Length: 549
Image (tube, rainbow, N blue to C red):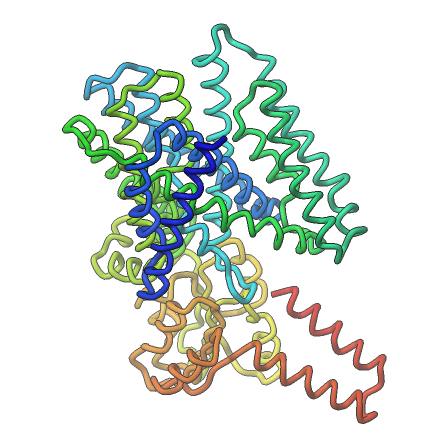
């Protein structure tokens, strides 16, 4: 116990010092966590580091599971499963062949392949949260793909436990694991919703419920000789946060992330050692697979299934880090003496490098997408466009609306009443049927594609309205080389002032508009100009409109 407590003191002391430096310089925290880990590894025994790393991974898996929106997964689940299985199968098979060619045994080649195939990004996932509640297509796809790969990770952990670590295959453990997931789903849909609704507002009880469930599932996994990560994954599913009454629980559980995130990243840095030539070879192979093959394969598959280039590229860029599951599997194998040290060091080294790269790509994904498009990479991958476009020949003096899903329906209705023609530009294939039914003219594609604006007849348009909540897409509209007036949506007042200075005709700031409308209604209610029933009706009408978006 003393050794673990001492290790925690060292980890959090060094992490806090480096975190302060990161805050003062405005730089990402992950590189500083890894650097703190390198120093931690000098004074902490590897046994404690391995144990802490396992617990850090377990709780990060729990936290990710809590945030998975299973209801939203239904809309993207099919394509996510296809993408994940194809990406993991292709990259895993190629990496296994490379591993065998490098002289690895079949079992070691499996570990090597898993490290490359189970690619995700804990760094990017932290950025997959829209500040205003509007979630772009690539975020929903990325979350679904991450969830699918986590399921693959659980299956692989179970498979190794049954057929590699056990003296004889223990199929009853597989049945117990399946039963645990079924129990978690049953609790979620039968008990949890009613319980959280009854306890709404009582944050202390909600906290106890959440922590008790998490500990209970992890303890159940330990008692049945299952991997702790199986229990954490099941617990996350049981208390996922897509119910409005569970907000108090989620806020409380999120505090655990501030505790376990430093543990995970610091211990990864601490496990990094001076690499041998053999380790460097494994590391380079993994880096190529994770940073190049995985994003490109994911982007290619999404493009072939009808998604636009931007959605495909941004989704692929969230899969550019060695998965926490891969690290967990490698650590378990090292503890069991079933993996050679150079391969383990290569997996850890590749994880640290890809974490650093993921820090950059998660912050500059829009810019990377622009560069790839300018250099023709997206075109080579096969971006769809013309098959889902219909614009009346000779159309002029029309309104171009970007992003149908964020209020475009209301603008379409308003334009119809004003007898004003319009063209909708949308890049979400899930909404294609809705756009086709609601609009006479539409263009499917990425706003970064010049061909999209040609087909939308930008030069003949009267106005461009961008409803996208994503800044890089809004900037594309702002920077269009045209005299056509443009109105763009912004997330804050600073962006509004900046875009107005850059020449847009107007901005849409939802928070400001909402505050102004609520203020007018409250003034009318207090001054007697608006009855209470009318005030309630107007509030309900606005809620219904916003929920449709």
